[in-house]
Length: 220
Image (cartoon, rainbow, N blue to C red):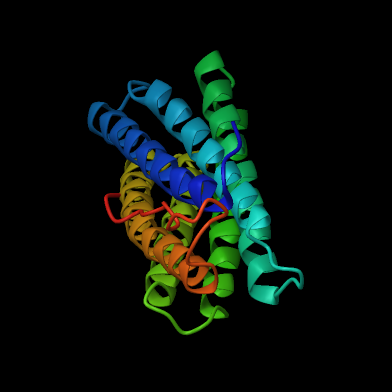
């Protein structure tokens, strides 16, 4: 089965949102219990987010036009960087659970910083896009994800400096800010995909069989 760029882009956004929610729930449980409870959800959430980032990167690559724009390069690069950051987060928390807590927290902090950088690249890419209904939402969504990721890195640094209480609180805030950003991004990408499909219909209102172009994402 072959998926279109639009399918991959929109699916990636929803998967990113689901992963962000699972991560936030796990972080909430960890913060409230002051224990390792919830870390299994954090690992799963980050792994799901990394998968969503990868789908977005592949979707945007498939949607590339003959000439690459700087905005497209930023968004594709940013999505891959975000995926690498989320994968690193999952590895770091797994190492924490294995008993090497300090090493795991360091890796987790690094992963959050990488994720924040990737989201920042995507926000810049969105800002360079054409003036549209989804441009502001794209900037805002990626901006929230970037902010939340950097807060998570700061929270881990507090943990490393034996200030675990405030560190956990910052991690909690950061995780929910990331989820809010992912939710906003779902709206942005839904509008973007609808815009792409509208342009396709205007350029080629009928497919090869003489029927109207079937795609519609209004139900997402």
